[in-house]
Length: 115
Length: 109
Image (cartoon, rainbow over the protein chains, first blue to last red):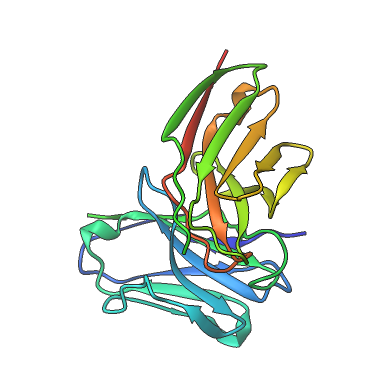
């Protein structure tokens, strides 16, 4: 079965610019997660979707970050404007359904460098 | 959310058994214990999950005492390719789980 797809794999931008990341979860997975992983730290959950509704966005910096999941499938995460501290790997994951199953499946991530 | 505490790093040698312990004193009744493995430049990968007692699969075992306030991930006969960061997560399955800093395991020849 195909895994979680993410693009781009790498992105370099200057501070104050905008950037968007795309994620295509595993087919049939209702729950989608976006994580931010700063070098040397564990992944930090930014937002969790169940189908196209938001379950948890308590750690999403909403003044600059936004995310959507149209039609309950693909998702995009946007940063506008970017700051130096946003340099990180952005991971997308999906699972069958929150509260069931046993695992989240992670994509390869997008490495963002903000100069 | 249950807070987890695990060692920052561990060293081992090829062929040895490695045990990584995670403390989670305030685990809730509905919480499961899940372990993930992460290699550099990759997303985390599920290793094992359990609720109580012992769980074993083809790559690891998970030991959970009766009070569930801690758990131990056991990796039998590690190889160089097991060098990675290992994360212990506690929470409802695929919901309300938070990654900590993890344990960086280095396997030496």
